[in-house]
Amino acid sequence: MTPTNEKLSGLLHMIAGMYRLKENNAFRAIAYQNASNSIAGLPEDISYYVKTDSLDQIPGVGKSIGEDIREFLGKGKVKRLEVLKCEVPSGLVELMDISGFGPKSLNTIHRKLKLETREEVIGALQDGSIAGIKGFGPKKVENMLRALKVHKTIEDRMLLWDAMNMGNQLLEKLRSFPGVKNAELAGSLRRRKETVGDIDILVTCQPHDRSAIVRFFTSRTLASKVLAKGETRASIILKSGKRQADLRIVNEKEWGSALVYFTGSKTHNIHLRSIARDRGMKISEYGVFSIKGDKWLAGRTEEEVYGKLKMDWIPPEMREDRGEIELAMHHRVPKLIEVSDLQGDLQMHSKWSDGVQSISDINQYIISHFQYNYFAVTDHSLSSRIAGGLKAAEFRKQILEIRELNRSNKSRFIKTGVEVDILQDGLLDLDDQLLADMDWVTASIHAGFTKDATERLIRATRNPNVHCIGHPMGRLIGKRAPYPADWDAVIKSCRVTGTALEINAQPERMDISDELAIKAKEAGVKVVISTDAHQPAQLHFMQLGVSVARRAGLTKEDIVNAWSWPEVQRYFRRAGKHSGISSTG
DNA sequence: GCCGTTTTCGGCCCGACTGTTTTCAGTCG
Image 1 (spheres, rainbow, N blue to C red):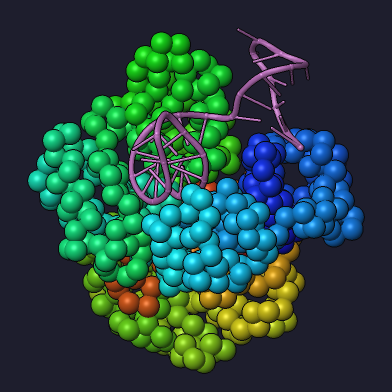
Image 2 (tube, rainbow, N blue to C red; image 1 turned 30 degrees about the horizontal axis):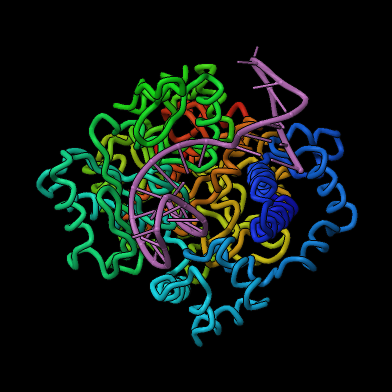
């Protein structure tokens, strides 16, 4: 998302929140929230739509919000919001993110006690003055206080990798519990979002087994706290790690519709329902029904549900309402890349620099765990001193070692390579001749994260020895923002020079992001999915990189390391890049 | 406030759980 879009989307979200706090404005609030969501998902900066006079092409943006947007771009603020701030206490809007603090409750508190800020509300909860309001019984006040506490202690969102591990453990326990027929992860975890808020699990069983399963889920074995518990659903804070997990139980006949419903995203679901409604049907977790007569039409499988709406099945990773519904209606859902399509891994480190294993051990591990046809060793160059970067002479020695290994294995399985540093001026810190001799050259930035990186990256793409830009955004999720850069310009230069962009599959990196991968595909830029492994177990991060690619709708044709090595060489030779000779001597 | 292949007016996704209620409003996902 561009910075302007992010700011604008946040501003519209704020307005939506304020309308929710005001009474009788629920639908106006929804309209602003829809516009906010739309803008968060735009492929271009909002200024483009103003320039081309196409604001009305953005779903949820009409005359009034269109004017707000023009005003925002012209003056940097919106009068509507300034007026609202005089009418509605903006300090209370942020509280609406906390569970139990809805617009109606906050409005009542504001009206009865004239409270304006978050701190005042917390104080009034603690000193008992809120307990005096009608409708605010002891349980409700207790829950609100508890939610405040949980909101503070629970860490924001977890990395996809951590969520996958936690979710799979939970899934195994549920699958082996008596009476459980099907169990599957749902929600943003099944969509493989880069970060996950809570773990959603869907289960089918016979009705008479439900209560035992809910009891197990909410027992002390799994839960440190029970947030909600009913006949068919329950929410807990997991004992392992302060994370929320939600269980939902449905009948087998409802499995498909429930999976669609709980996999989401919210905007995908809303879009599906409005299409169903247009066709005289309605969708819920219990199935697809006719509006007339309320007749059950479908729901056993996801294919059946989408099929009833005359759509192809949509892979979970794409269900973000970014155009996939239209693709499915026209039967043009792409065949997404799969882990099994990959023929090699093109970034990893050996103990020559900061990896832990020898090249020979890595070779053995890959042969016994993967179906690859090649892999490249890409140790750091000298500038990355912390990472034990190598001098040119050491790379020459490493090349000899790889040749020897290949010779004794009678193969060309191991490719020579490097993750070379892009210096401040965009030049590389190894000489061109050495780079030209390498089979695979990834160029990455490892210092100067706050400066604009556009020129630096573009200059690197123009080097005929560089096949790929490594972790192009330089972000660490939740720790370090991407460096500022004009990504459109960088992608354009990749297109012109035939340079690929990496999807780095390290759990904290996931770099490039799905949004940038969508742009790359649109521009015709190829992508390399690599693990950047520093120890053999990390070679299995590949599935994370694949999930980014799948969320971006990428296919085999888009992914360099889904091609055979001769195809890789042919592609880069045509693009005017040098292709190495060193692994074979 | 937005939107329209039955609509330019009258809708706007749908159902479970909780708490405070004597039949339902508020909130959540």
